[in-house]
Length: 303
Length: 262
Image (cartoon, rainbow over all chains, first blue to last red; front, top):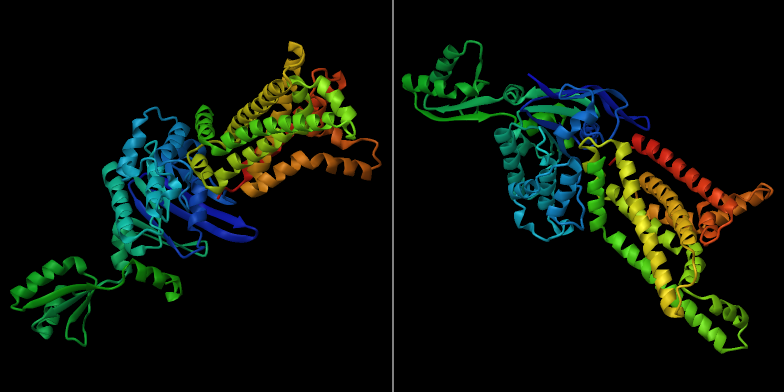
């Protein structure tokens, strides 16, 4: 699989403090890479180095398989930290500045992107009068100018209301699915990240802690299946026969808990029904991304 | 480079700071000429006024060109240029928009030079507006453009333009390095108004055999704001402009290349 971004042992030292400490990540083409970490973990510093806003003090960064980063950055759109806009300009004027910078001849592209970001109605309103959600969307539209293949978004959902968060999430999902755009996104709103990310990287104290695929999350989160059935003992026997390697446990509510096997829920239901057991409910339980992240970080001090 | 320039010129067109500072240059020129005329009228109307003789002599020479040569050395326009460059350049860091430029693969040296070129064009525009306003308002108030040879005017404009470009290089370097509008405005104003005095004081500390302020841009602006400058002053002025300009660009680009942008 082709890597869009690879960092190899990248470090950044600020006055003797390692903000990023030998971090290696790989973002593959088509990934929505969720970059997770507590405040000050080094997410933004790493993203800034990827975008050319800071120089690494050690290690290597490759974009699209090349170390000529300046030459590759025209294929990268990025939004780092707060929305960076000219407050006295309108949305269209902000887009125009970036269009001229990128040498895009087609003027219509600005209108189309504003339309896509839901800002075509902003008219003559200056960016300083925009809501945070509008600013975030305008920034995303700006970073999409030049049709980049790779988007780097630092906390794009920060400060948005639930509607705004959903809009940004849907927008990113559309970009990934319809345009095949690779996205590196950091967010503290892990529940939202879980809905779009296909891969995750976890950073803490400047060091990479873990990197895994979304489908690995279920295994790592140790998800269980709870079965509420008419005959718990018979249910336990059927399930034990079915999965020799899995140990069932009985809960105080007389339900049966199976470790893993969430994907086998349909088959379990079928077998139990065939055995004459009435299945009242099959419920997945266990950690979500947030729980897993907190467990990884060593507790709830990061909550 | 051309794309960065196009984008920066678009920002200049939309920059309120540019239009306000240019308007202030023009208004200041008109105000100074008007204030001088009122001062002259008051002094001439009262023979007991201590300034009677000097004002009477001045009034015989007063014209548009005279106003230009009298007020240009004071460098008020350079203060406005310093303020504009500080706002135009530093705001890119304040708003965070420098990130949008650098993250799309623009080379830092090109970004620096684009800012310098655009600010130089704006500074020259402000200089010409100031000069034109002085000549026009002087001609209107005193009823005469004055006498000037084409070559004399051309050399004055050329030398002043060169010095203004050198000032702009210094202002661009300061603003790019400080990255804060307030700090850059203050430093640029200090450069125009206090650097000469400071350099003279330093010269005195070291015995005063060489006056360092002679090699400062403001001194050359003053000495060369005339239709007939001394050839020595012209050579010094060109060398001072080239020295400060090139040094500012070299140090500015070197620092900017190493700078982390937030």
